[in-house]
Image (cartoon, rainbow over all chains, first blue to last red; front, side, top):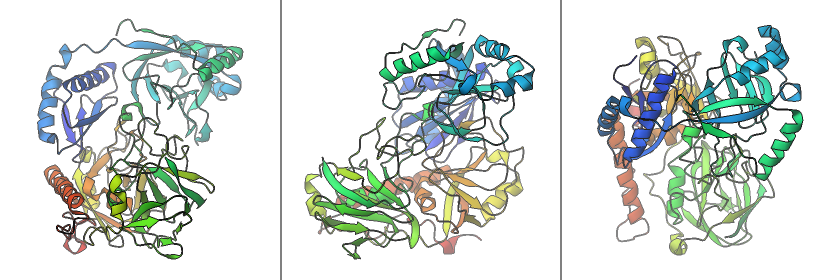
Length: 244
Length: 341
């Protein structure tokens, strides 16, 4: 779908702008471009923007900006989106210790896919994953682009507690749990990075529209990096993403 | 900043909340904050605080507190039978407390959440700009958790006029009747088109009751199933406050303060802001129904409410211009006698 955006009311204090009806990098890029354009407009009464896969939720104060007036401005901005250049995306390298006590479901993934553990790791670390959005819990990245060969269905019954930093697979998706939470993903490894730290500035390591790569590390490296993260001295590896 | 209270017993779920943690929803951080936006606002007004001041939110039964310093408090929201040194503590009113005074609460007689504001505000460290407790994320408020026996609550410096607040009362017409059946005014969307005509009619004509699984994240309702037109999954998108989600089982959930920022269930409608406080006070077994309003009507309701608040704030405590008797948008929602049922 490449037509005009759909503008949908969400009560009187929020507005949904749908820019497509599929999960694709193109639609997602349009959502993020619209969000950037709205931020730049700095319209009084526009309070907060939540970009998701294919839509933007705009929180507004209708006593400062009328929803109808905002809809008109959004429609005009959306027309000019193809001309907007989104900011240069970055790639963050996430070190992961796969298997062992950090990856209790790695063997299940192997069973399900017929691959050896080192093959699963190679396929998981081989991709460059687009961050479509953050949601579900603070800092949780919805990543796209995982190799289909390692897709594995979720647990039938979720675990009550998945430790923070756990890296998992659910169906064709992969993601990282920033905080302890219940969940049904197949856990194949853990990162010592803190995707979310409320006392850090900035609190969130990742943002929509950027990219993630995974790098396999040893248990000894895990402990070393965890210590540096704790001390605030670990230099998170981020580079410009070539190819947009 | 001084110690304002010692917590002798915490009650089943008492947390420090302000209006919520804003600015980080794009990163998946829920807003949290007081589930009821109305009652704590009035409590803060009574004790001379800014609207951002942190309060205690208590659920179904309250804590037992001992005042450690002189202060001014106000209790609003659900009627928990508050007492001060064993005597009834009048609610919706600013009351002076002295060191050693004991404030206690019983079980809610109507409504579900009560709020205690203290002049100066509850003083806990702000995390990411807010003193609200986000329990699942274990941040904010009292160390990211509910109150425990033995906690001490610090209080910020009171506004200079706080002492003159003692005795101020919220006019009777502003005090909601939490035992009345709940009718929520809603604006259809964003996914109203994901439901059949029959489903929309069920939603508007159905009588729902609050499930015992209601919590700070959402008020789950039991009642007639709402029919989907095209399955119960959507591509995950943003969830505004008051969104009415309808998962596959067909029963609506009104999303509240601790709702996740995004979700994959269709949202049939969104509760008008002025009615959020009613669903925030709903207890298991309470009756709930929905009535449709246009977005423009919802904006006008909000406009009238804000004008009324400004008027109330200006007149409270001015004997020459006492506040007008009633909240213009009927804090308990539309008159139950008016509803089309």
